[in-house]
Amino acid sequence: MEYRNLGRSGLKVPELCFGAGTFGAGNEFFKAWGETSQDEATNIVSICMEAGLNFFDTADVYSDGASETMLGKAIAHLHREDVLISSKTTFRQGNLKGPNDVGSSRYHIIQAVENSLKRLNTDYIDVYHLHGFDALTPLDETLSALNHLVISGKVRYIACSNFSGWHLMKSLSISERYGWAKYVGHQVYYSLIGREYEHELMPLALDQGVGALVWSPLGWGRLTGKIRRGQPLPEKSRLHKTADFGPQVEDEYLYKVVDALDEVATETGKTVPQIALNWLLGRPTVSTLVIGARNEEQLRANLGAVGWKLTPEQVAKLDAASEPTIAYPYWHQRQFVERNPKPV
Image 1 (cartoon, rainbow, N blue to C red):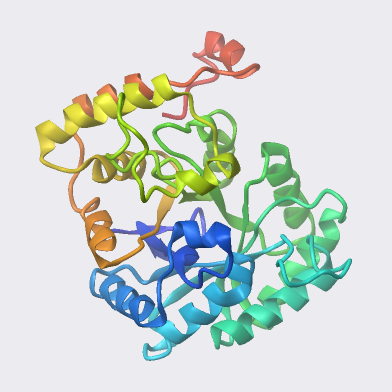
Image 2: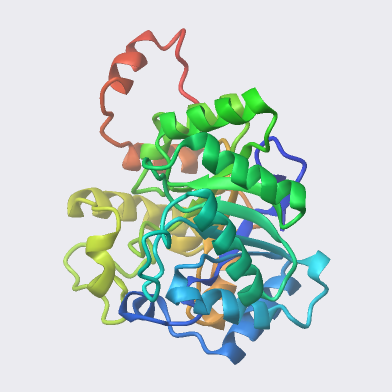
């Protein structure tokens, strides 16, 4: 397992991070991801640690806090300093209805951190994210609250998730102005069938030293190798219940990418998801990929994505098959490429 700096910070994180969204199954949405029991969760954590994957990602909204609780129990037998925990807040937990139980206000952030610490049974969170952008709360209120948590030792590093470019850049500017802790990571959607991250967020991250923590690196379950042209959706796919909540992908575009993955799979002897994950690990700014698994078999398969590299020719084949349509102003900027070089 390779360890990489999280952005321009000094924190080293493994190239794979385990996403604990399958822990808890607190509602129908998360049941579609998986229904991992506590014993299974503890076993998964042990397998991860044996492989050098010591980074675990969760959030207060994952199964209304049950994911954090199960993760806390699953790591309880480990030395805390050997484990890295990532959690998030901003969205409303289904069981909390108050007007201040949502968003990125000082009130909600501090309350959310205290509750997450209790559920995780720990004194601090290594990487704490805002799960989304709250346009109703002043950024200086949000960032000063996060800085307070860093100074207090309850949070070690701060990050954001699902921000637009201007959301992130304005936040970094305010933090720099006041000497506050800055976002060192951005948890983003990025995959072979979802490359919008490359248009603005990747160049920004390169310029500002923000590491990408990639969520849903297999395209919301579409790059498992089980979805192909002319075949029905697999019976156990979470797409049956969650497709409308995630990124939308044109069928023909998906099949074109899967065809290229199949070709590379034949050349390498690796699986389609292993190749899709490995491709991402070669992209600029990527610090870690948040992988999930319903069971031990899926986890061990995903761990097979590291320890080897695609050839430049194979990368080029996957790049060509997955080349996205470029939105304005990025297609215009590509015409002035000698002064606006592509980041990849």
